[in-house]
Length: 432
Image (cartoon, rainbow, N blue to C red; front, side, top):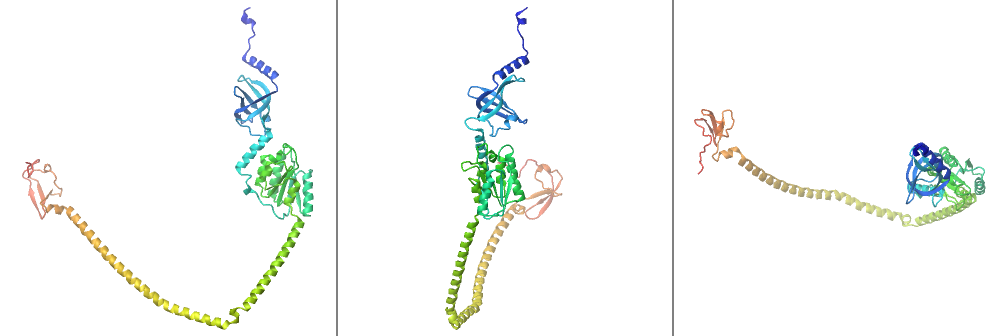
């Protein structure tokens, strides 16, 4: 038996399978730190990328069931920590890591997602104070979106009843944390607006960790608050907790109790304001009547009422003065108009005379130019024009034949002749 027959020969598939099983057995729960590169989010929902450092790289795949729980925006250049198992993709014979968990390096995943969403919405202008709506002074109905079993609704009811008893309050119960909470909160806001169920709306919950408050950082809730026609007070957590909903709401309250104070006016304060307003109105009316009484007394003692006859005489004299002005005014106006018209006539006559002289000179100059260019003027200087009987002008002796009849036009008159001889190159004035 030869040496070659003693060795085990693998097929490519067998060798790849053995390598894959070895890697999966020895590297089943590996943490890898690296920078995301060549990220591709496939239409299937899976992510394909490379993890690299300064000296090496490894291919990675994040299947859809894993990446759906990633809350931050995955992109090239992001440094991450991933947990997964090393395996081999048989078709390419390429080793890779199948990611089971991924988080940004140096910062929590939720905190990074919060920063990314905040930066995105700030660039879109959702936090601009120009978009914030004022709260109504005296709402007819208060709406509250929160958990029906938490302390939030109890605090709001206590404060509202103390400040303004019997104010109608409408509770829309929702989940405030966990899966599906963001969708419930956003739908509640939309329903309140669509049905116009209240004049002002409080959206909130009690305090908690970042994970507990996360529903109020979801983009679907933030955009529902921004699109609300009803003014919204955000009352999420305690004073130290700030969510994206707080930033986009029309008013932020540190606690649910403070939100109720913002939304519900104090009845005692309103009554006190009404009492003060009544006092100010009474004082204003009293002062107004006193001022008018003083004006009447001043009018009673005025010159117009004590000396009415003298005032009438002065008015008559003023009327006579105005009458004289009106009577004399048309005559002066007509005389001034005649003088102006005569002056204009003189100016127009001088202008027309000057214009006619200039036009005559131009006409004479043009006539002289035309006469100088006239064929008749050329003939008067001793030239003539010879033509056949059909009026065709003869320009070259070569065109004539012996015995042909031609007509010659002189400066004055013309004559008819017969060609006796033709000198095709000759001239009456031979060159010296």
